[in-house]
Amino acid sequence: MKILKFALLVLLPQLLTQTSQAAQATCLAYEPASAAISGMLHRETFPGRPNYESIAQGDEPETGFYLTLPQAICTIADPAHQMDGLAAVREVQLVLNEKQYAELRPYLGRLVRLDGKLFPASTGHHHADLLLRVENAPSSRGKTK
Image (tube, rainbow, N blue to C red):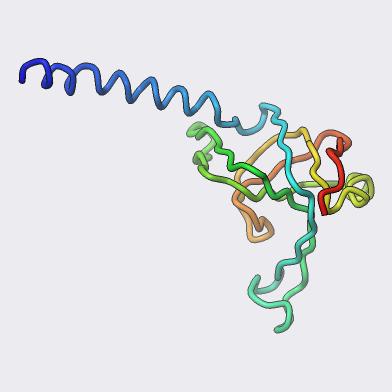
């Protein structure tokens, strides 16, 4: 019984700390760190201003490019910048300029790998919990449609 108590009081907290550290090692960091993610590139439209509720009822359409990830990812919390960590993320909204939209358009429906900086959603214009500010031209991994 004393050995079991010792294990619970001493070893279990150490094991939990190591497990948490291992989980953080596999999670991705927010900007300014760079990250590389791969997923299926697709276009989505959501309701925007003024109410962010319904395009049919007059809200502006907001169309953007997104990656659907084959496996969920997580992010590491950044308390200094008030950014909570995210778990089980499968959809990432891309932040692109006009040139990047044009470069990515031919890759719609394909698995692509993109590099950039991650940050969590913070406004009504963000339609996924996680966003990637894209910094590179895409590399395609083939048509998967």
